[in-house]
Length: 307
Image (spheres, rainbow, N blue to C red):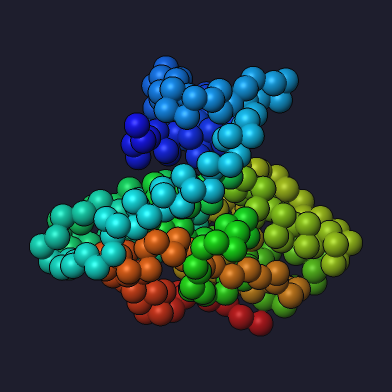
């Protein structure tokens, strides 16, 4: 007997995660299904494969010896369904799974939705959040693409630079205190709305301010999502330091203005990441080209105030 594809996927996930519950969560299976697959694998290889320890399930010597071959087999089976596929966006029915940051949803999704509606009416898209599991999902084939600033993606993926991002200050038009060229100390004393965005946004500019300027902004309101901040800013004297492309997107929905920071902004690079197995996937190549085109054709900012 030889293991089937599902059993191979469970084996490699168990080898990498060391726990049945974690494998079940990652693969979207019931723990009992994972346990039964492990029992069949043990029968096939005549070995325990994994034993329980105080730090999780650890692979046996046999499991360590077969893992490289089964991992490679998993890759080859996934790639065999993709290489050389024809893809006509006008008539092909396909569902893409893309992980992107919250900022990416605001910045890239409107243009992508428009392209899908006009050029690919039978193509659908599932957008999921970027998490610590995202690199594994891309490697395992459960994702087609990852969009964002994700330094943890590793070296096994291919990436294409989309754009370099910096920060600007966003506030309501007619804000009584915000103005171009104001002193840094005065700017930091303004009432700030901070969006942590899982810590990344805050770390990029607030910790930058503390490290480079020796001061922190006056945070009056903090939330974990960008959702709705355009209305909070439009209805108050709060200001928010946000990525520039997000600022442009939010200005479409509320009477807001954008002012450059009174100090050098930190920056980061946004990439689209894919696994080598998707190199020859015609549909995935089409999606990557569409996203690159959307970025290149981005609209200029509105209500931009410069010193």
